[in-house]
Structures are given as structure tokens and as C-alpha cells.
Image (cartoon, rainbow over all chains, first blue to last red; front, top):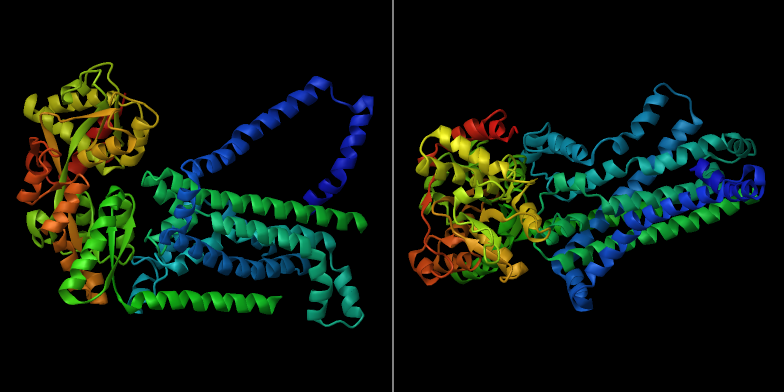
Length: 295
Length: 333
């Protein structure tokens, strides 16, 4: 994040100076070739599918669109997706801040291992992530018989979906904060403590304002993934209509019923969420860049 | 900010438990089923709920779960709380019987070997049947392109393979001739989709292949969804009977005390009302009267029973579909 921010802050200035000087300027055809390549890739792989989602969603008119979204099963899917995100995001926020704090400010044994392991959910396939929970909490898993005896349902119920969501969105906040906090060092906090601030005061008044934009950025990405996750959630869901289907799972089910317009209507909700996330992300980047420039 | 976060989390948790609690307050049964029975049970469930209410005065809720049949069976084994299991092939229920969830003699618990309806493998061809495909032997001819889901992963594909095998046994005689025949037929398959619905999309949306081999109900549904003017259904001289078995999950009904309603639910599938809905969704009903009433839809077709002609499902799996089995041998090009 810190790297991305500085390149954003300085990239535009450096780039244009680079281009003004004849000695460092690329030949025109290279410039247009690269521009053309990246723009046509963008159009084919990003823009076209995005447009297709909305075109397909509205193919049978607004009436079908509204019906598809107000159907009880669709509403249940929206509700479950919101619940899962509302639990996973705050928990990962707390975890992310404390993990980044521990890694950036303290020295301890196993620090490198922790830094590496935080990324595990990024590198492991979501299906494997889901199966891990089945192996642990499933009827034939480690805790399965105990849970069964006590009538506690984890997988194929809401808790399992929340667990899987937490797992796959685990690294987002911590990943954003660790480089940021490491680059900021401890000087400002030390100054605050020397001036008589308590630990909590230091956190609220010094640390939090410093990491605010990185934190928000991480939370937004975390939320987008939490609402959009398919693989891991699909494994632990049990696919009970109206009960354990999240929005992405609902899209698949409706699509398999040959109900294409309704499937794309629900998919358009997810696409809107993605667009909204991007807009928020851009706003945060601009704000953060101006703050970096001011500092 | 943190305290606000905590109060939010508390609110959400309370909400989750509340919804979980209200769901438990009334009698609820869960039917875990395979992929293409969605439309059927969407209509069966409200009909059963009304019938149960009329009979006992109780309100029952029936929840549905659908997915690839073997995956669904695995979920039930891992604790998905299914009261009843409605599948499209016996091996998936045998698997649950091995796990101790379903009675070993599940086939004797309900009429017709616990299969309230069947289907048969048929061919779907392009309108007017331009390639003149009439029987299994035509599918094995050179230059014909056939769409079949992968027999390794799909029950639908497995039945297709076995139907072709049975046809060859009856008409060409001997396992060697049968092996040669299915090798030719499966050599004509350009792409193997993972499941029945994927194969349907390949054939009907992407216009690949001269014929799609699938269950009669799926073939009829395609004709309705994508236009009857585009496809014709062809009945081969001999097809395979694919019964759809049902069973009760003993462990769950004992725990939830839902044995009575779960049994009534499965028996409802055999009632004239249930059988009529089954026929409406293009599955072949067991009830003679309902079958006669829908004769136009279900032309008589000669079928064979896999376990009688080829062998028990356990043997079939071992000799044909296990790694290194006959299916693997014929698919080496």
C-alpha cells in the first residue's frame, strides 16, 4: 500500500518529465502499441463482461429484474451475505490492526513465520479452505461427533459460512497495514508516550490517524471479497434454499435453473458492489495521496 | 469507533440466533436432492405441505438443497441435516447406507425398490434429424459427433455409457464386442462436460454435436426451454432404466423426531397427486393410471435394469469406472 501510494503520488510527475525529454521518450509507435494493447485487453476482458452482465440482466425488462431481486430466496441470500460480511469484516479489522501492530512495532520470535502465514488464505485454493472446515467440523471430522451430541451446527449452517468468509478475507487488512506501519516506525508513538499520553490515547490520537487510509482501503477490499466469495462458501454451505445460500451461490443456482435473466439480475448486484468498491477505493487513494503530498 | 463495532457485532449475532431459533420452532424437514430435480420439488413441496396440513392440521416447512448428486451425498455424510434424500442413482444412497445413516435395506422401505419414478436415456437431435440417428449403432458411426457428460463425474454420463454397453451386449453379444462398441461411440464425443447441465449447454447453446444423450426429462425440458422447433427426441431400440431412489436419514429423523412426517413426505411421492406432478415434470411415474394419462409424453420404450443385465452397482463401479477400469481403457486414444 505504501509503495502503491508513493508511486501514485510521484508517478504522474515523474512520468511526464520522462516523456518531455527527447532522450528518454519512447518512439511514438511503441507508445501507441502499448496503449492499444492494454486498452483492448481492458475492453475485452473487463469492460465487455461487465456490460454483458447488465445487458443480460435487463434483457427481459425491468419487471423481471425487480421480481428476480425481490424473490424471497434472493432476499434471504442478500441477508445472509450481509450477515457474513458484517461479522467477518469487523473481526478481520480487529485482527488486522493487532497483527500489523505486533509485526511492525514489536520484536518477537516467529515474527517472520507470522508475516508469511498471514498470506496463507491468498495462496491456498478457496475449495481447500472450505474442505478444511468440513474436515474439522464435519460429522466425520475432528469435532464432528461432539458437536453433533450437543446439537451445535457449524458447517451447512450460518456459522460455517461466516468461518469460511473470515478465512478467505483474513489477510486483507493486515496486508495493507503491515508495510504502512513498518515504514512509519515508532518515533511518533514514542514522542506521544514521552509527552505523557497513555497507551490508548497514543493509539487513538497518533497511530490511528496515521494508518486511517490504509485501514479503510483494507476494510473495503476485505468487504468486497467477503460478499463475493464463492468457492470456500460453496463447500460449507449445504445449498439449502433460502437459508444457506449467499448471493454468489444464489446466482449459480438460478443460472442452473435456466433462469438466465434472474441470474444476471442478482449478478448485477455483485457487479454494482464491485463498482461501488472501486469508486470508494479511488476516493481513498486520492485523499491519501494528497495527505502524503502535504506531509 | 470500536464500541460501535462491538455493538454491531452483538446485534448481528443476536439476529443470527433469533433466525436460527425461529427456524427451529416449527417442524422443518430438509430434502437433499440432486441437480435437475429443482423444478419438480418446487412443486411437490407446497402440494405436500397442503396435504399434510389437511391430514394432521400441522404446518410443516420443507427446505430444499440441490447440487451434484455425489457431492450432495458427501455433504449428508459430513452432517448436512437431511431428513430425506432423493437421488438419481442408487450408489449415492448405498454410500450413505455404508456410513450408517440410511438403513441397509432402504430399497424395501418404499414401493418399487424405493424409486417413485424413473427416467430413460434418450437422444436429442437437431430438428428433422439431418444425420438420420435412430439407434445406438448410429452414434458409433464415423463422422457423428455425440455430446455426453463425463461418466467419471456424472450419473447421467454413467447411464449413457451403461445403456450403450447393454445395447451392445444384447445386439452384438459378448463383453469384447461391447467394449469395442462403446470405444467407437465414446471416440465420437468431442468434449466431456462435468455434469448433465453442462452437456445440455454445450449442445443447445453452443451448437456443438449431432446428438445429445441425456435423460428423457432433461431432453423434454430442453425442447421446452429452447424451442421445440429446434430439436427432436429419438428413442433408441433399447434404453436403460434410471430409477430415482429415495431414502430416510435414520440418524436425523430420530434426532429431530421427524420420522413420521419424513415418511409421509416420501409416500406422498407415490400418491396419485404426487405422481401427477412427477409426470408433469417429464419423469416416468410408477402409477399405471397416471402413466396411461400421459401416454403421449412417454412412448413405450424397451428398457433394461443395470443390476440385472450388467451387474451390481459395486461391481459396475469396480470393473467400468474405477481408475484403470474399462472406461479408462477405452478412452485412451
